[in-house]
Amino acid sequence: MPALLPPLRLTGALVLRDGALQRRSIAFAAGRLTRGPLPEVDLSGYLVMPGIVDAHAPLPPGPFETTTLDPAAAAGVTTSVVVLPWGWRGGPRAATMAEAAMARIAALRPRLAPDVRLHLLAEATAVRDEARLIAAAGRRHLHGVVFADSRVEPHSLPEDLRAAYVAAQRDRRDVPRHLCRLAEALDALALPYGSHSDPDGETRERHSMIGARIAVFPATRSAAVAAHAMMSPVILSAPRLLAGDRVTAGLIAEGVCDALASEGEPASLARAAALLAPDLGWPKAWGLISSGPAEVLRMADRGRLDSGARADLTVVHAESGAVEATICAGRLTWLSGEAARRFRAQAFAAPLLSRTLPPPMAAE
Image (cartoon, rainbow, N blue to C red; front, side, top):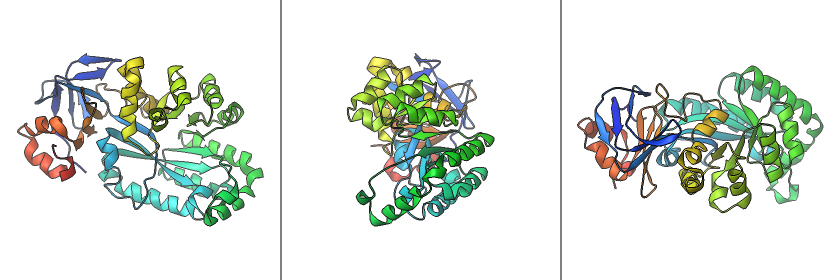
């Protein structure tokens, strides 16, 4: 993991603080935002924004290594909620594979660039793995759970998934009691939980009634509007917004959106905020990828640039919109472009940056 930066003050930039872009400096020390005269880095021509909180990032394919989330750091992400499949979609060994991934990520977490939190995307029909899920949550490997009830035509699935799906459907009559027991256990552990791809308002209401308040990627406008009416947080897809999805854009314009998530495309988050900024203004647009998801996921120490909060910062070039620096808990996890030259111009920087940032992050 990159070394902790020394106490610094970033000057000259427009800083998103107290609900507005302000021409002011921002300082941090020991991984927390602070005040006082400190050595300076001039970031004139940049926006200094709260670090991006990616509320739903599917587990990337392949072995999970310390470099797996480098693309997220390069996209300005300082907190990544990595989602593991649990149930038939993960295949016949889904629970075993998820448990192995939890252990692997827990071991690597101190060395990862973004702060990683784990959620399970748990199929409602995974009734037989209920005790294992509760045990994993009790070990504090998890930060939250999202329930899904995926229904497909079995013939459309590969053979291994088809068998897992058909087997899971045999337990469907036990799903309501299973979800209630899970909700009770998650409440006792004070973990956030919600539902994924609710097809309609009635389904969202049933999930809300058992405490699964967060609506992740509701499949229809009616489901999203129902969630909003019940004061349940709504998480929408940044890639779908960028692809021109009118329902997503309309819901955001109506205020029926509390957060945007990457669906595995971390670069989409800052781009989505920039797309929305002309209409919503930077504070509201950036809030959908910082303070919004932090509040939804109960992360009170991030998402805003308040004194004493984690020093999670995303540095954006004001003209190009490129993320040129990411600082996660006071550690420089991404550096490129003109921002790299300015950081490296400081006396402290040469030995520190050459030791902590790999060659692909060097100045262009």
